[in-house]
Length: 315
Image (cartoon, rainbow, N blue to C red; front, side):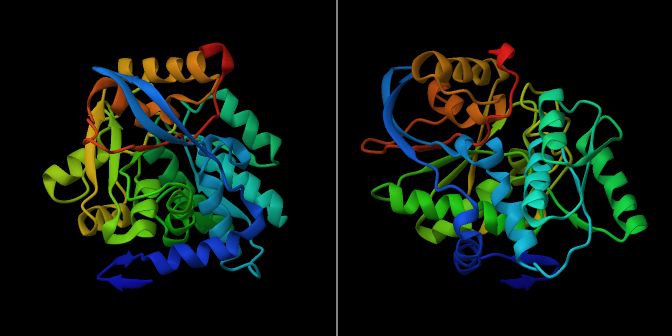
């Protein structure tokens, strides 16, 4: 890992080191080769079932990697989160025997709050957006002398998330495009760093939360308004600086999908495969089914199903 200006530059070697560090603590999640309905007929895809990860979210990989990177440090942990990052931090802290406080916006769903409580975290509500919660978490970390984890813009967090990419590389033949939901961009950036210059990562974003799309258009991270059914997981108001650097370096593309397409993809996963994911977990599939991403002949895109922390009654 090196630093270019103020931005840490993450490489495949960092992701490989994270995989060794995480070892037996995370699940090697399976893949499922299948066909899904597209706008013009069946489309061959591979589903990466990362929603089966401990805690129901890929984010455990990043949180645990960050804590294991300095396992001698037993200070309390604070994180701002719309939901899944808080669950992951709570679980990682439970594994490490460390206190955890999650600062969440008032919009955080009760299902995710309950999971944080279940892993022993203190939960504090502050503000209406992730940005509000993050500002308060900054203050609280300074006040308490705590370690602050970032939901998506910390090198160890991004490297841990990138281990998903190393697994895909071993599980899938050829260099297939990998479609990943983007909020703050940590997962897409980590996978791109893992796969390197020969990889192809497509960031898929809700139309109402286009952080990467707006940043690529502006040439830098910019704030966007958030209005999407996936906002509890993809609620970052701007792309992370690490993700932006990697997006430029490895030419991560962005496509956007509507909330209707996301809802239809989520319902389709349940109806056809009995797979339960939250709205954010269906975003990448929505790109295929809506035609926002059209595979080239011979391609079998890898669709990352990234999270399953949802209220079952909402299906």
